[in-house]
Amino acid sequence: MPRVRRVDIILASDEEQYKHYEAVDALYRQGKEVSIKEHKSGFPAVTVDCGDIHLLTDCLSLEAWWTTFGKQRTPPEQWTIFGKQRTPPAQAAKGKERHGPIPFDREP
Image (cartoon, rainbow, N blue to C red; front, top):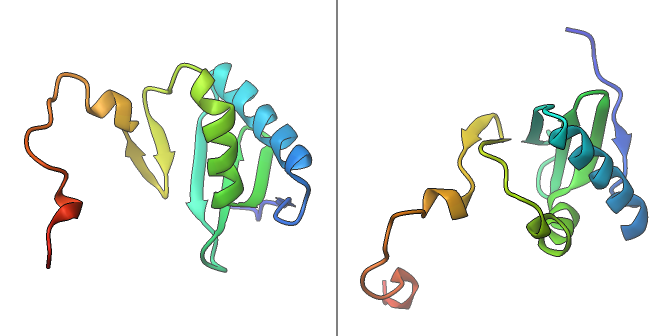
């Protein structure tokens, strides 16, 4: 498999990063698969691959973009994150009710 040349946008401005994320989102909305994997350099670097777009970015700016813009869209049925198919939390929780306190309030 040939090596992919990635566009490094880690140090780019938020606006520049968001342009790239919007391009990925547009391809995703056309049916292209999006893959997000941890980069070998470690946290917070991740790789984002979708169609002809291959990015090296940080998960913090990606999460900030999703919080601001991505939530305005219909969530995907499946995401490929770190090589595993995952169901978005909102869809995984459909039909399931929480009972009892949130477990974070317990002492170890």
